[in-house]
Amino acid sequence: MTKSKGPTPRKRKQMPKIFLGYVFPRSPGLIHESFMRSVLRLYAGSIGKCMIQPMGIATGPLLSKARNVLLGYFMEGDYDYFLWADTDIEFDWQDLAVLMQSNRDIAGSVYLTLDSSGEPVCAHLLEKEGSPGVYADVPLSLCYEDDGTPKEEVRVSGLGCGFTLIKRNVIQALSDQKGGIKRLWPYAETGEDEGFGEDLTFGLRAAEIGFDSYLIPKSKVAHIKEIAI
View: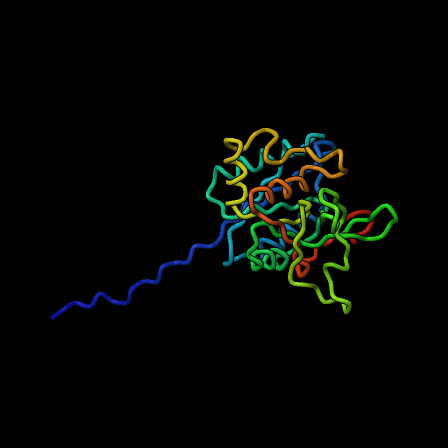
């Protein structure tokens, strides 16, 4: 008589591992309570779907150095994604879920800032059509249909770090170019003369080695200024 082995146990599906990185000013060293509530909402929604490891670091004027320190910690672990979240951004689980579902190497949420005329624009970078090397903010008209319906995605030149998801292979490829995460690489403030900093130039360097950045309008987060816009 053959002894039954019983049902074969199902292999537990491994959940994606996400490193949530954020930087905050060394002085006064405070984080907006809206940001902390956002992190709690993110945790609550992610239960059973993914694992999230948050880590913050205080920074002075050299923001690129702080970002690279966090990337160093990320690369030491076995995380699948790096999620940037600025501490003046409000978000929840669904915003992250939409970015993950896009399956893009670099995917960012819409968040707004004001241009020089006081009009709201997306806080991201787009090369002007017919003007190579000339960049501007992303207009809202590219992200939404005339009736306000968000478009699926918009390819851009660079994304701000407000709420942006990056796959590990992107960071690995940039790191390999310079022999590892360096003090000022791959985030480096090399675009200041053009009026944009280390976050936007990251996208330009990633594009040079084949990784495009995409804005995902279905994920829209609030940017805390005097008011949340």
